[in-house]
Length: 140
Image (cartoon, rainbow, N blue to C red; front, side, top):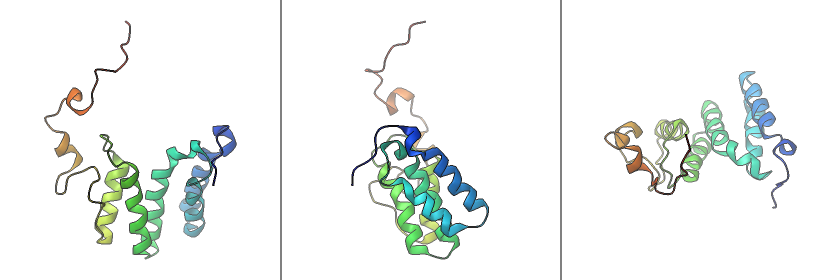
């Protein structure tokens, strides 16, 4: 299936994400799950919402007692961020969701077992986390 690539305004990703959140806040969880599911194959501009939408779907499915499906959605952000040196709140929420579901995270994703992202980053400088040799220089 091809992705619509013309305009971030045409895909209306931001509006769809907000609408899904509104449905969630109104207790219309099934509808919210459906709207959060609209980010997988619509537009390249929707990819920014893909990982957060999986975490939200995981939370909603967990609330509905659908642990297997919830665990699947919690795994997706970990797979999407595999190999990234940025360990953020989405990854933490996804890992915590997997723990609540009693499921395992993909083996080679981000955080080391038993260590939080903060513990992993302690003692590291920015330069040791990223190769800054090719970073653009900012003129002052």
